[in-house]
Amino acid sequence: MSVSVASGVAPRWTLRPGVYRATTPSGDLMLAAWPHSQLLGRAEPAVLALLGALAEGPVTLSALLDATEPGDRAVLSATVDRLRAGGWLSKVVADSGRELYTVIPVATPVEAPVPAGDLALSRFAVLRTTADGLVLEAPGSWCDIRLHDPAVAALIADPSGDAGLSAGAAGQLRADLAAAGMLVTKDAPEPFEHRQWSGHELWFHERSRLGNRGWFGASFGGTFWARGAHEPPPARPECYPGAAIDLARPDLAALCRTDPTLTTVLEERESIRDHDDDNPITIDQLGEFLYRCARVRMIRLIEGFEYASKPYPGGGSAYELEVYPIVRLAAGLTAGMYHYDAHDHQLRLVQHAAHSSVRRLLKVATESSVTKSPPQVLFAISARVGRILWKYEAMGYALILKHVGVLQQTMYTVATAMNLAPCAIGSGDDLAFISATGRDRFTECSVGEFMVGSRREEPLAWQL
Image (cartoon, rainbow, N blue to C red; front, side):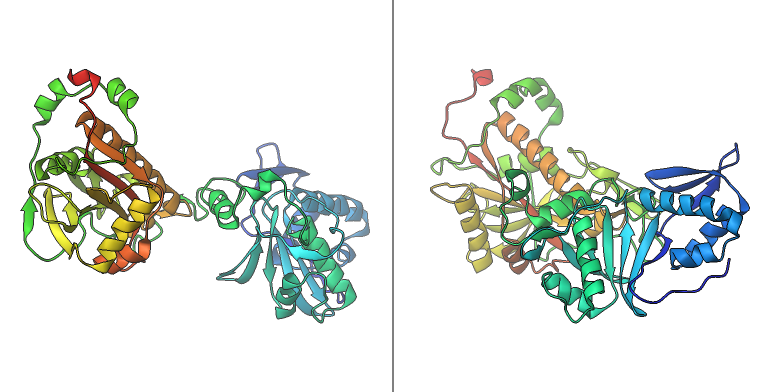
């Protein structure tokens, strides 16, 4: 099917990216782009030619129909309508041959009127750079808008103007932004359900879950995208210089006989922010705690990647988290920031206690946990992100945060069983961590905090 391209603001159409065509055993034509699929009836030659022209597009609908035999035009017109309604066609908008933008559906299109009053871009909309240029996205939208002309970006910044575009082109862009849910009335009040979300958190939520934008085989999940291009990061990080401090190893067999039950520690677990500085945590207690929570139990090499095992669960057995005890007060151990070598069960000094970044990490933890004094031991939890992101796409950082949660829960249960005072902290200072460790933040960054110390309280009921 040979077609020509029309001029003016009339849109042109092409199949959206990632669409596959198949014929069912019964002879019906099916389009698929996971998780969406649609049957289009019998695989007639004219329909196949139409799909071929759309795959080669973009073309105007009038050009498509003009290049069709008169007897097929009604069927093809209905097919085009079904394709547009099903979200299978991208729309390219140009103004007198000047290509402006493309609307790329990721779900079934919806219609929405242009809001009244002064207009503004939704605070949830994100304009970002991709390999194909600038793309405007918004969580929950049925489409993306790919920009081809700087004037489009200017109008997006001020939707009430025209940015030098013709009235028809500016009106078409406003209509497409409104339909995409990216245009709002300026200063209009938002319902609580919208106000509770920040733009980056909603975007992150959508991008880290399966849905219209993410699916297996499309830059989501365990794709091993870096295999063959980059060596996988080893399970063991680069050691810090200086002498290693051996830590005590608890007798796990004895603990299996004497520890409280799982139900007991879960029911007794609580966040305790006050530590007994007259009887501080000891280096042996710290060693037992780290051994029970975070040691490496096993390493296996499979197809060039080192898989590990630790006491807490880890997606893909990558175990990207590292633990840095920041010691203010511990019997038998000099104050300072240490790295826990989970492979050899040792500590290595990272920075002295007087370092400004170490003091800042303790200060931030004190203020975040609303305590009267800094914790005896603060654990800065970092992620060697390449251990996860070498394998996982899109969902990788969300997986890292899940691992922080399961490690913190493990720390809570072990601390409760040991009659220590535990407390997870909701935020920390990544820049202070980078300054103290000297690590490259693109390689290793802090992702969680947890503090522990000695308890002032009486022994738990199970110990009496």
